[in-house]
Image (cartoon, rainbow, N blue to C red; front, side, top):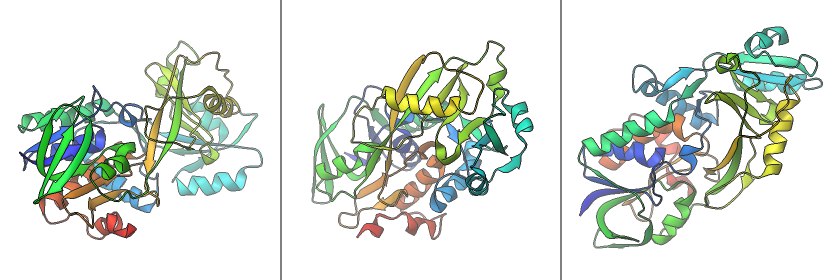
Length: 358
């Protein structure tokens, strides 16, 4: 018997289990052998405060202090450059404003990223306060909290069926059965599948695939390591230094289904082509590639709260591509609701409630 059972070993599940474990007996279940196996291990690992819709941005801002040196210290400076080509002036200015970048000259942009092609790039915008996230450190922080507080993590433990009876959940997995008071659905792309197993109406979450390629660095000098993240307009691509090389993404959103996603050559080629259009650099080979599922609610906003029909079933879902950068605030809100504590978030809590889908 356990107070709270959390399903999902990505950043959402680990962060809420870590917080809850300070006040309750918690068990976390992960279907895969390793924690963070799916989207959490395939993140661009960037903190961009002005990214996502208005609600997401509030969660970003509310998470920043916890993630910074005042908290777990997982942020390091990166910066960001938006690049626009000829005939893209209007769109460039619009997106500079939207993502809070200030316009700089192309020559100044080239001081930041030496390989920018000044023949194809006519507009550039810069934002300093964008950061890399040490995602491994953040995952480990919450994992250590869970274990230090006497709660448990079970990997290779997939939920097969669930039954709610006499105020208790009986959760059958492929290895054992658990009984709990509250189940937290933090199953990423599988949140609707888990809801069905629990007899709960799905909310219509949609997994969208996004791919990434790791490519050799433009030179051996190492100067690229300090380059800011680079974006094409309308997110035609993004690129950033990573592990001594560069990662390039086509930023695609391909409708998908819950599975162990992988990149295909056509998507990667589109992203690399868009990247090569604005730089003096030709990608000769891909050293590795992968894809992740960014799972969104129908309104592309987080879902945090008890189900309206069975109030012992809790949704922590729809992180989309913002899981790491919203995790501190999202897990705090979720734990406050579950534990019946006074909310720190006011009206924001109502805006992410699953009641909006009634």
